[in-house]
Picture 1 (cartoon, rainbow, N blue to C red):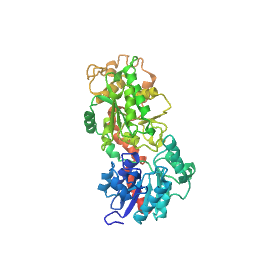
Picture 2: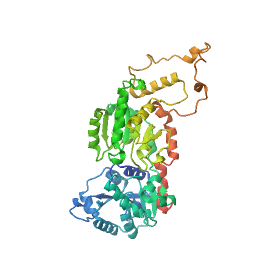
Picture 3: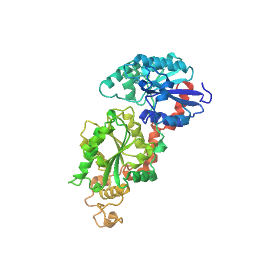
Picture 4: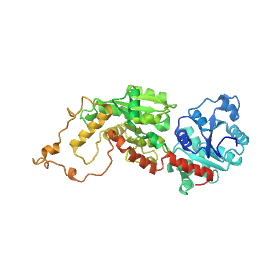
Amino acid sequence: MEEGYGQIRVLHVLGGLGVGGAECRIIDLYRNMDRDRIQFDFLVHYPAEKTGKKSPTSDELMAVREPDYFDNSVYKLGGRIFCLPKFVGTNMGDYKAAIKKFFAQHQNEWKVVQGHMTSTAAIYLPIAKKAGIPICIAHARSAGVDNGIKGLATRFLRTPLHKVGITDYNFACSREAGISVFGQDLTDKGLVKVIPNAIDLKKFAYNEAVRNKIREELGVSNALVIGHVGSFRYAKNHEFLLNVFAQVCRLLDNDDLNQYSMMHGMRVRLLMLGKGPLMDEMKKLADKLHIYDRCIFAGNKSNASDYYQAMDYFCFPSRSEGLPGSVIEAQAARLQCLVSDAVTPEVNVTELVSMMSINSEARDWARKILDDLTLREDYQTDPLQEEIRVNQTFTVIAGERRESVFETDDQPDIDLLDKGTGFDTVNVPQEAVKPRRKLIEYSIGDRAQSSEYIQGKLKAAGFDVKSQAKMMALFYARGRF
């Protein structure tokens, strides 16, 4: 091993170092790792034709490779980046030759090779094992595949991972991801270790100053902001998200029955973080739905945690996920979340999450969002006091509005005025006299109040990256849990 690097080096195999879910989770883990003991290196992929060769070396590929999002972070943390030619299906022989050449050139440098790119893990992990790597791990990060031929090819390439002996360990971010990649049999036999996608919880804790700063920058200081974080690709289901938001706008614009009167006059915006191959297509759809001017396509942000603070609600209608870190991040930021029930249930950690089928109508999703925002549930509270509280909640978001129910901030104490007159016991619903449930109020305006409680639940469920970094450091050092 090269002098100056950590005692134990781990090689992570990925498609690239862009702002993807797996990449973000690994870099978070890396930042919290004891790097005097453990160091990470990264093996990524890049098109071979850029070099003019069929089976180029890592050095040849790195010479033409364009820097990726997390490259600088890796270098600053002491890691190295290597490269393989991108696998395209028709270059199996050249791909294998490049892998063999790579591990032959880097004998005895890594104790662990951890493959997060499971579509080709059954190709590169056996070669790594034969080259003398002590521990080879396949790490499942997704519970689904792309549609069409690409998805079929992915399933076929993963088939060897269903057998014992291809890897030393199988990791998965959720049980569903384990079944999807390694099969039902290995998962049921306990041969798949579930390791949740952990985050830096404190980084996402509710911060009102950050919220106000980002909202001012975005020009949404007095708007209601529905948020989403995810790359623009098939699995994330952005077309459904846009249709849901369009229905939210229509329900508010045509609320003849005044079901959502508390929101009348408020601007509503959809804030989307992420980039991807379908981004331009989704912009066209937003224009077609007449909501483009209400949508914010923010792209990738290095300070994504700050943008969660600017949101008031989180919508995540994915078609499939291993365990979406963005939903955990949204909960850590104390946002109510409406999530597709196609997403692994492990994400449903706190009372903030509601799950709904993407086979439901977009209008049903929109009504659920608006009902959540206006607290249209049985909270067993006095209706007048609830109305006052809801009005105050929306004032937190949008400031004073002309539609405010009350003319002044000085509200009369109705119970005190009625006391002793007989009206204090007349027309009181039976529900109102029952003992109220002890619960934390989950309205928008109390994010700071319940932030510590929510973060505690997420940490207890294993989503704290600092705790996970300690566990994984021990595993890398000992080679076992």
